[in-house]
Figure: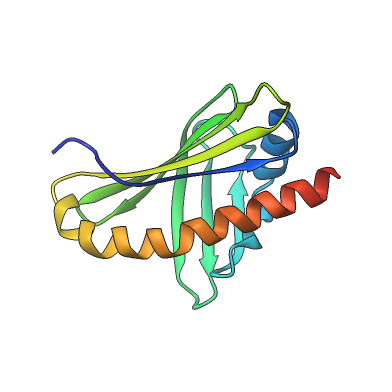
Amino acid sequence: MSAVNIFTHSAEVQANDQAAWEFWTRVENWTLDVAIESVSLNGGFVKGSNGITKTIDGQLIEWKIVDVEDKRAVIEIPIPGAIDRFEWTFESRDDGRTRITQNISLSGEQAESFLPAMGQAFEQGIMDGMRRLAEEIDRWTA
């Protein structure tokens, strides 16, 4: 099965793309998401580094950075029979602002069985999480 797009959402920030990227690649800032207790990264924010996210309910989620280039990163989370893929892009706008886009897709033999639950769960939390991220980036760079 090829990758199936689950959800795409964008937010804009006043900050330039470099400042927004620097804020986001400091994974400790990911705890802005109210569902996340902590995030750790083994190594720098580079292709091949592994990380662990601990949710507030104690779940440990292992992930890997599979691509990083020009203010774009792809993070994959293996789940039984599938791969959950998060692609982030930070695009400079003509007015100096930055558009941050997160695209989530799912691939693998069991991907279709996860689609209904994941689509609903991501849609509910991602828009709020990206709004909070944009607010914090703007506060950090003000």
